[in-house]
Image (cartoon, rainbow, N blue to C red; front, side, top):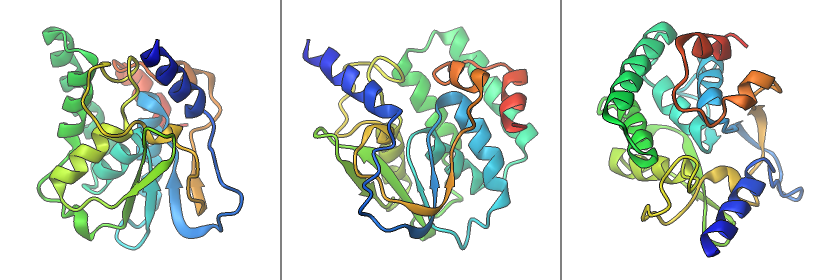
Length: 208
């Protein structure tokens, strides 16, 4: 029963931005999460910004889009590589936790010094409040990505031993002058928690 209550809280909060109206907008770019489909849309949008100068605040899959964007990937190459990963995951019958971790590991590169990047990752603590985190190294980055993308029973198993949850559920998010949120598109929302997207789906989300 307790797990069900936690899950309902997270899902109910996920689609509520939870902004504190008393917080002044900061000079940053806020990236809203959007699940598996939103990942591709955000990745495409990030090509318009200077990653060396801007300060990004993100949560959920948007953080994964951001980390991959630091490597300046060709979008067609990113689609091709993700398709290879998907096929292997399907073949091995991966569970939700392993599936998410494989995706996370695939976008973390040792060539990136994340400490030098202007990145703030949001996670949700067990009281529903926002935790603002600055990745110190790639190991810390991996932990934060695991947490900010974790929704029990939706993107991960119930028995994951993590301190925090998906950053989309937290109350008291900071505000930024610039915001990138996923468009109100039927197919986008329908595919939000669909991990195995087709190549056509990914191209569609990129071009929205």
